[in-house]
Image (cartoon, rainbow, N blue to C red; front, side, top):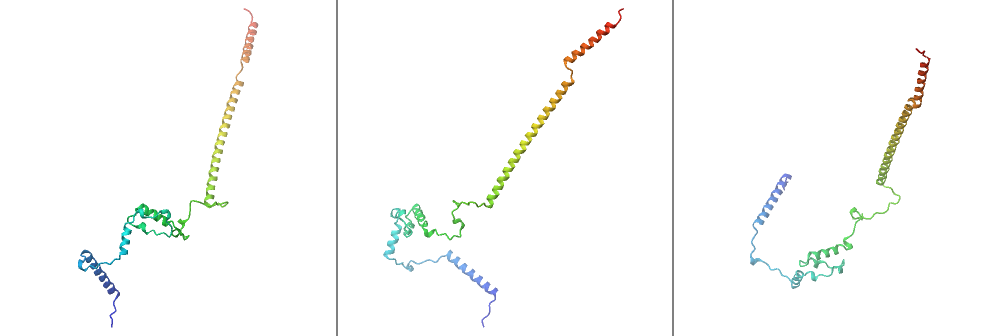
Length: 206
């Protein structure tokens, strides 16, 4: 009869097994086994593979085709050679990734759209446009109200000035009317002198 293993025992066994495997790997990394030269098995390589590797290592910028002549079906693997400069390799990769096969949009990425050109809205007024129009209208009304207040203040000041001038003029005219003129003063003096003369004539002589 097979003894049923409890979940805790299974977990402990697997944990110990993993720990032992980790220790074995660390030991192999710290003390790698030495390989005897006689035990090495030479790798058989064909002359074709050797020539291809040699040819690929010898490829330089001069061996690369013109960038403008490359098409989507061209072989870009020679540009990955170590002898090719990074500038030429980047130009080749840029030419490759401009091919239509690498520029297929699924239509679900919003960043794939061209946001540099916008279609005319026509008579459509968006919510933001309406809000901007309301702000502009409120600004114009505030400016008109401030201008009207300034005009009202100017008119009030002008009316007050005119009223002050009229009051001062009326006061000046009243003062002139109340003050006797020089002619009236001379006439009053003459009358008083005549009365004194008549009074002297009526007095008896001593």
